[in-house]
Length: 89
Image 1 (tube, rainbow, N blue to C red):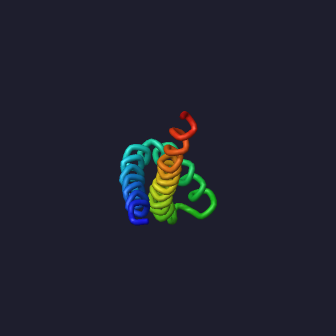
Image 2: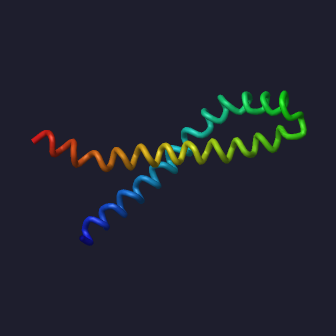
Image 3: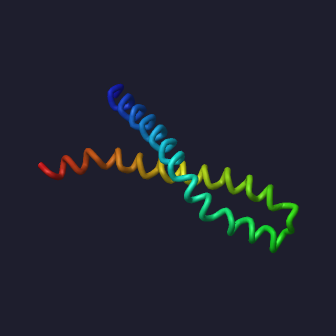
């Protein structure tokens, strides 16, 4: 069915764009709340020289994690919408 694949493609695009927006707004507070933990752990266990590497890695990991979880939840919500309306009839 072409209509079904078109709808799935559109909902996938909506989920990705929404996940980008969610990442844009959620990244600063989550990163700001956790970066000191990562820096302290790195400094204590691996030395001061690797703190900047750990910080850069944490930026990437934090952003990817927020994007992936956001995309999953938005995709799940978009796929559950038809079941919600079907059960209310």
